[in-house]
Length: 285
Image (cartoon, rainbow, N blue to C red; front, side):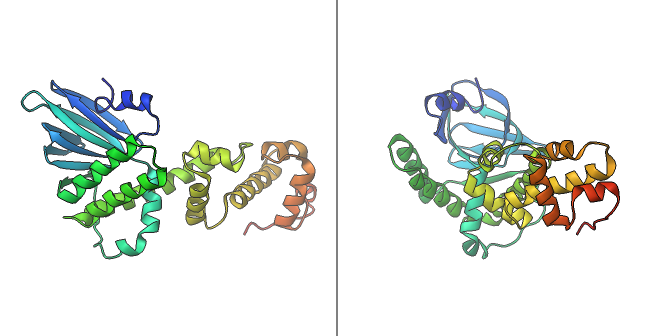
């Protein structure tokens, strides 16, 4: 059986589904790894979650938020049955949520050193109604925008519930991880001959979110940053290699030598050939 019971089976039936039901009739253990965050609500039985040196028991009528990461899950039936609802939260959605509701979240206290990646909570009537609404929406043909509002509603209820500041700290950590992942991703791929839509798709975000995240992290557009990094890479090759200027241009991701020369002159105020010959030196600012 795959992650959290019937999760993978249901994804085959509907790739867009993010709310799933799982059911076990025997005790089931699993190592769970995910690049996304999840909320698990236990309806019957008990879920034990272990990560590092932290162990958490989630009983019926309660739930837990799991940050992206690795966990050992132990599902134990009660009276022969374990049932739970699993909600998958895209990192992109959480990042947009924190930006959209930043004013609302300012009232929450700051919590440092939240390390376990877990946030337990008790169900109440409002959370139950929201979960029920999410399930109903997934069964109907409503626009995705309405479903996103339900996701936001769930997060707001948890954030303004008991110890919601701990969840806020976990969500904030996630956005920092996304920025780190963006930096590593771009350093690895900035020489690729991709369109911006390709960069966004490979990173796992919409083009709009990719641009917003890029501007937040780098303070400039993706196109401007890529051009700058390619020029700096080309400049280094001019000084440290014996490659021809044509080969330098190709290696640095420029479509032609003439385009490379124009871009280089705009950036450094001189031409690649004059720098290569030693006639001029440039200062990197």
